[in-house]
Length: 90
Image 1: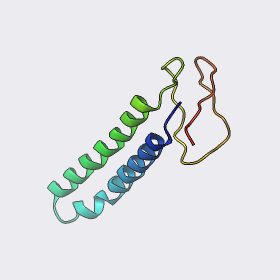
Image 2: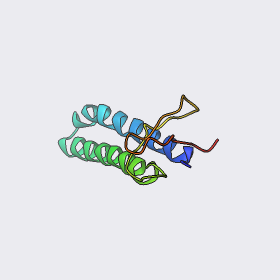
Image 3: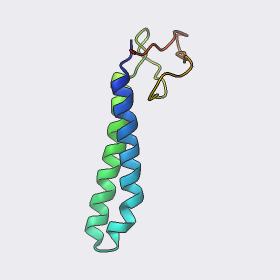
């Protein structure tokens, strides 16, 4: 059973990372070093979102497939490798 809290953490990290990357030109205007640091932080947060998704969101049956993280209950998704249904808690 997949835990929805990890799906939500993944979504939040991805949105935060994209927001940081999009705001990067605002910080780059003042100094190039701050722009580079901001971009690297945003990229690290996006990578962390994919790591959380890969580590905690794999198929409980075969361990290969990973569903797209969902915030709330949606129609059932199935693993592309083994065909089992992805079941979330709550």
